[in-house]
Image (cartoon, rainbow, N blue to C red; front, top):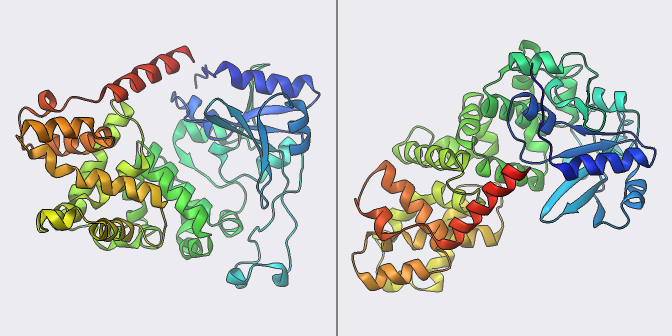
Length: 404
């Protein structure tokens, strides 16, 4: 397998800084996996023998912050990007039932509630979830470490294989169930037989995961340029009914079919860098069919009231329960939905006002996608061009990626 990673120079500089201070340090996890798959990673994670306090001391001239309680790590700020730096861990000691949070008193005995017992790089690899995520790369010395002995082969063969006993791995952290299915959806991987068997047996454990973690995972999936494929795999495995039950219950109806088409088209445009990722736009896409019918059946004066807007926010939120996107994201999604009707107008004043609206970029993207899937005006791109702001942002983004 060819391995010629194009790593951003500042990542190598961070790793070199830790090594020069006397610590082991590697690029780990998804970034290494993506490089082996000839994909550019979205973000980078670094793992080191330095404790969070020692990392902060090494980079005292930079903006760094120690975060977390269950899993303490360092956020290293590089411009607007955050690089996570974690300390090598070993398998933590089990805690007594009396020490567990009240809502998970009946959780499996293997479930991890604290994960701050530091260890060696080999111990860190062995306690990770899947072989494809347990690769360590030292860009300073150009050294790739596969401590499980199966990671590189499993990436080459497209296999999702749990490290150790797969049932124990899922019981330790049920969010690993979600991550296994994401690998199947996003990369087209196949699950190793014992891993798949254990996953199916432990699906319901996902209900023990905290809402905050699950909401964060939902946002990542909806923003993901392969998100529609991930949701499809969730449905196939019976996981979607635990994760987003409203979407699962309507999976085969015409609205949901159209929603999947909208998400697919949007994700194609993200992958070709025609538009950027956005959680609020993704929320608007999912709610669009229901919201469009409701708006069309409501009087214009009613639509302009705050009460109607609040009702729209409740409608958008209902698709994602029991997850809770931020009010800001929901509000932006509602604004995008309320602007859709104006794209059908032939009134020059309405068109000009729309192009000057602060929500034009996202609203235009949704309308453009709708028009591609179910055309309603031939002159769309001519009358409603991309906003200058979005054009500049993407031009700058392409230059940055090329430079890296």
